[in-house]
Length: 101
Image 1 (tube, helix red, strand yellow):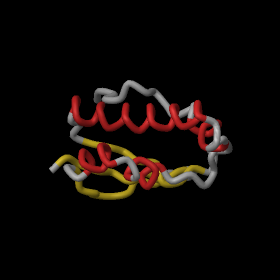
Image 2 (spheres, one colour):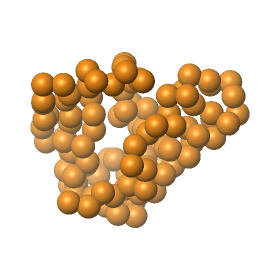
Image 3 (cartoon, helix red, strand yellow):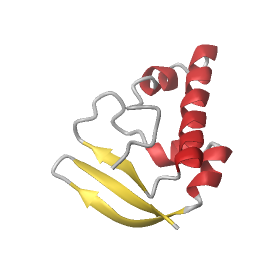
């Protein structure tokens, strides 16, 4: 398995999303969305795993990753190449699994 994203995690998002009126926050949000879209376009991963819940996530407990990224048209266009094939559940988290068409 190869990590297809330049971003190892989204540690910048909680602060950026909690300060929507700060221009720097808008820049961070745009950078994260654009980076993910570009990474998918460039690397065309066969599988994308999306966290849908995580009881250990204390920094963004109710955050929904997929709606956040789908609000960015470039990401949405790339993500249309994927179909949801299942859900992986652990005792602490759940993930949706998407496979490239």
